[in-house]
Image (cartoon, rainbow, N blue to C red; front, side, top):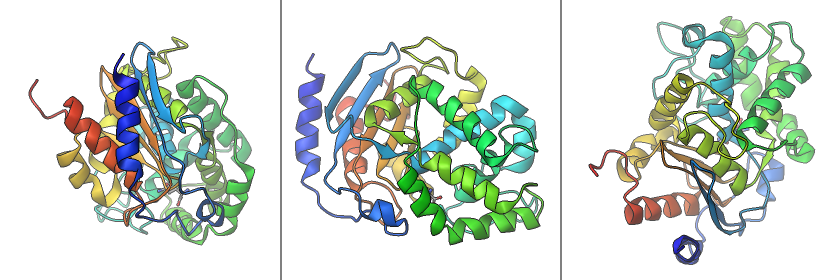
Length: 308
Ligand code: GLN
């Protein structure tokens, strides 16, 4: 197959871009190796192509958000979740302190306000932070097709400096969007963000979405088809934060980024795509990851609005 050669070639070409910085507001992420560069593509029948550091683990960070959203909908049904978290792009940074004007809901589940809320929805209302996190870990592991574990250093490092997320959670509690102790929700959400994944894992998780909710390798139905449709729609409009419109018009497939440098993309019915490279642009998206995805989209006609 010519695919691995192609992947090596675009890694060489996009790997030369040294612009951007590792995330600096989480001390442990600031110390990440900025040169890590990996790519993996997984088809819906589980065929995998990869190049570079596809087996280097990074914390999943915000790429966990679509999965937590999926798990919350699976548990409560869409209507219940929509009552608490909206689906409108915010056009703001991921850590903005904001709620929808009339409804008082977080605007969408891909910004931190919405993600803290979907995290709090998982498990029983009275569940402890540990119990809630364990459900999230198991759910996300089913997408990856292997048991995911936490990077305790990243977790400690982010939680110790989570002033912004504590503020958001306190805002959510004061408006009764969440019922739990704000700090417990921040702790559980931060653990969720600290789960370690490789580009290979992210591609498998993306391929599970691309495959309508069935994990291509294990064959397990992880999530219902209609939930996948909901999650991918919100990813498409909100997944790249305040760069979502630029991303969608130029690259053209639903995607989610995280501040550790991962990008996960989904071509429904076809492939899951993952890139890992820690240098970030001003929106918090991976510089080389965006370049790689834009190359692939152009070379392989991946824009979903393009007529075949
Ligand atoms: N854990 C990070 C935070 O809550 C995730 C942000 C991101 O990846 N964009 O700030």
